[in-house]
Length: 193
Image (cartoon, rainbow, N blue to C red; front, side, top):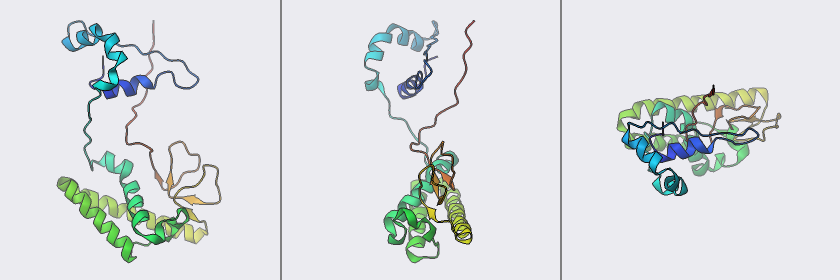
């Protein structure tokens, strides 16, 4: 049937037919459901102007899934903007949690997260601590192997380690960092008989 929100419908249908493979969107409406009947009866006018029907979607902040996708990026962004010694792309290997600026930013980020979601404050603080530990371990590993640690590196750069990498990069870094917080669900195959 029709996705519950117009935004979901636009996202799902806009992915069809991208690239080399042609696609087809099939909408299966239910004749006994008023919502489906309304979509069917208003199909053309709806599709000619559906962007004005897009509803704001709610995001539950600080769930495990949201933290897992973006908390590391928030940490990196906050530190790069607040601490001069971490601002350059080549300074990811200079990360030291005991540095005054770094520790202050980490505590400020924890406090900000706690104000935003008191129910998940402890989980979020522990998650931040785990990220700090992982980053520090990566710094130590790169120092021991004498490989420079960058925030980002070109996908074909084998001489440098990277803290962040994009989905699809052949050379991975410590944290996969999406360009969007949208969740893209798995595709489904359709067999027509």
